[in-house]
Length: 170
Image (cartoon, rainbow, N blue to C red; front, side, top):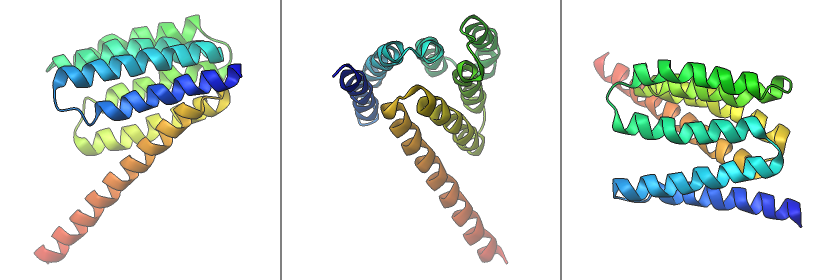
């Protein structure tokens, strides 16, 4: 029963995340995403996945800062030491480094153009998927898979459009 409740919390977090993308008002989006992050943090805590917990909590602050700032690259540089500290203080084998690594890749990708963001997202979500698999976060794995498929579709669409443009100009 305990395992069911832990996974249920993760799936509820996922539902809040999905619902946030359907909101129109900026404050509604932020509120639902903060609720999602808090629930995912609780989910990781109950799974004993402490590095995932701390990274999710920090990502809440980081993403809000990205949202409110026009200086994304400096925010990314400021976040690197925090990810390193999270990785060091929670080190318990290679698995414990994965959330910090995934989030540094994600943070860097948020500083670039759309194609860079999408490719960075593919790498980041793959690393998160591995971590979620290893710590038993089924909701996290579902989230990662959906984001991976979404980013793959974005890349395929962009490639298809590029091919059409080249054919037209030839």
